[in-house]
Length: 91
Image (cartoon, rainbow, N blue to C red; front, side):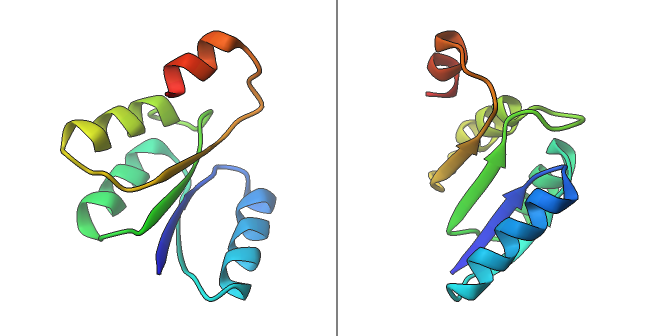
């Protein structure tokens, strides 16, 4: 299985990569929303691990773009945001 990790913090991305690769996943990493969309357009992913607070395009924008083009890839959102409005927007 191939997973896209979208995370701008190097230490968090490295930790996610190690854990996923230890479980047998192939991991690609994007550092911002633009890079994430480019990779998603170029490759087929089985899942996306997506930080919501990333540069260039937010995780919300990345999700909207993927869904608008018809992608049904499962997205696991990572965030430090706690508000109910943020949770509603993510859904």
